[in-house]
Length: 316
Ligand SMILES: Cc1ncc(COP(=O)(O)O)c(C=O)c1O
Image (cartoon, rainbow, N blue to C red; front, side, top):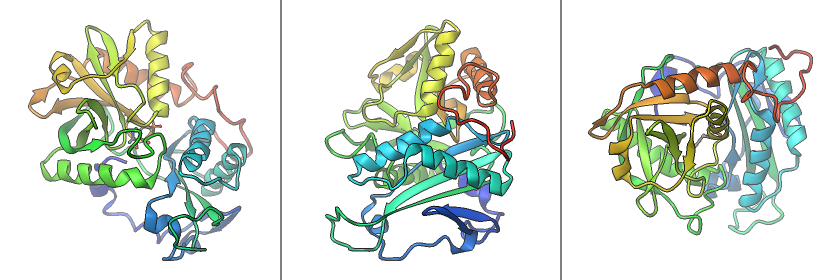
C-alpha cells in the first residue's frame, strides 16, 4: 500500500474493531476474533505473504491471478499454503458475499504459526485469513495526480531478498520510504533498484511515456503487478508501443507523462518526481479510463482471464 491511506482512514474505527466476519483457516469467524498469537513465526521473521485485491460491482478483479500469486509467494518464502488457488478464490467470494460488499478491498494473508520460533521451521503450521471491507482507492478519486520523491531506500537485488514474493519481509522498505516521502510533503516514494535504476513506488509499478510509447522496468527487482500486466495489454490493444527495459533516473527528464499502476492505485497519474513536473497527459487519461472499464468487465483487459464464475451473492 502507498502511504496516502493513513490520513483517509483516520476517522474510521481501527481494523480490529469492526463488525462482520473474516475467513480464517477454513471458516468465517467474527471479525474481532480473527487473532493470532504474539509468538507467531510470521510476525517475528517477516515471512508472511499477502495480496491486495479490489472489489468492483461485487466481484474481485483478477481474483484468480491474485490467488495464484499468493500461492507462489508462499512457495518463494519456503512454505506451502494448505489451500489451493481455487479454494482461495472460493474463500474470497464467500467473504465478499458475507460482507455484502459491492466496492471495496480484500486482504488475503498467510503466515507461519506459533509452533516454534526457530528460524528454520519447515514443519510449522501455516494460517490463512481473508478479510474484505469498504475502502476507497487510496489516493483521491479522479486524475488529480500524485507527487513522488526518490527514496534513499532501494529495491534489493533478486539474490539479496525474495523480490518476486509479495511478502511482509519486503514491505518494511516500502513503509520506511513512504513515511519519509510523506514527511517531505510528497504523496509517495519512488524507489530505485539495487543498481540505481528506476524501479517502482511503495505499492505500484512505474510507467514513463516517451515519444508516445510506454516504458516500464521489467519485473526483475519489482513486483510483477497484476495491474501492470492489465495496463500493458490495454495499451497494446490500443496500438501503443510498450517497452520493458531498465532505465536510469535521467530518463525521467525525457518522459512527457509518468503514471503508476497497482490494485490500490489503479492508473494513477504522477505530476511530479523530485524537481520534475508532468502534466496529466492523454496517454495516462486514456489508459486510466480503459482500466476503469476493464475492472467492470467492459473492456477486454477485464475479468475474462482468471475470473471466477459468478456465484450467488456476487453482483456485477
Ligand atoms: C511493491 C508493489 N509493487 C507493485 C504493486 C502493484 O501490484 P498489483 O498491480 O498486482 O496490485 C504492488 C501492489 O500490490 C506493490 O506492493
